[in-house]
Image 1 (cartoon, rainbow, N blue to C red):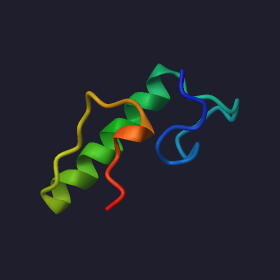
Image 2 (cartoon, helix red, strand yellow):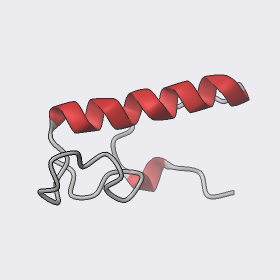
Image 3 (tube, helix red, strand yellow):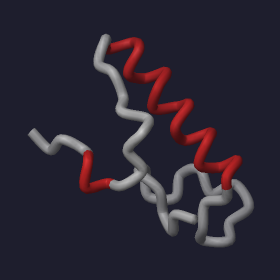
Length: 55
């Protein structure tokens, strides 16, 4: 499990400091919806912050 997630624990609904499968799915769904609005695809196969573009 991810400790903080992409958004720094914003989706840690139960407050245990870790993201379970549901919380991870909610975060990825949120990122997907945001990317649709900007017409920028989110790589849902990437579960590591090292894959994020910082440009």
